[in-house]
Amino acid sequence: MSRQSRVHKRRKNEEVDLDITPFMNLMIVLVPVLLLSMVFTHIRIHDVQLPELSQRISDATEEKNLELVVNDEGFKLYFPAGNLLKEFPAKEDKSMPYLELRDYLRLVKSTFQEKEKDKSDITLLAAADTDYQTLILTLDAVKFIPEQVGEEVVMAALFPEVSLGSAPAQ
Figure (cartoon, rainbow, N blue to C red):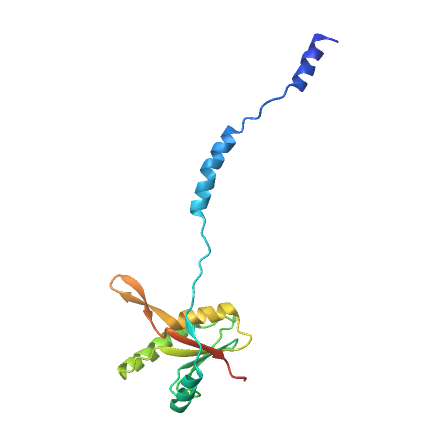
């Protein structure tokens, strides 16, 4: 065997230690940075009330409920219960008119305040096939409205006391 082949054979058999120090340094820096920049899931809770039977009986005699029917065709606002106040049809691209609803509810709220009745409750009547996202966005539109106060925008209460129910069959 020649000398060259012996040297070459030794090199193949030598074990080389792997230096992972640079990789570990990278992980030590990268993991905290990624954890700090991570956005955790935000969970919001909507406070809704289910109408009690005694309240339904007294409301049936007074018929002073503000009702909003939600379905795929749009929104229908009733006041007093059973009398159509305004209809908000869904747009051609099947999106719901949340801004129009919120602006109109602001007018309704101001008329209640003019009559010195501070009405803060509304009943949402959702169709059985109403999608969850539509219901949540409707709750957002009904409960609060952005108001300009000085240089700040704050969320003012519109109808924060929301009751849920099933929409009547068409």
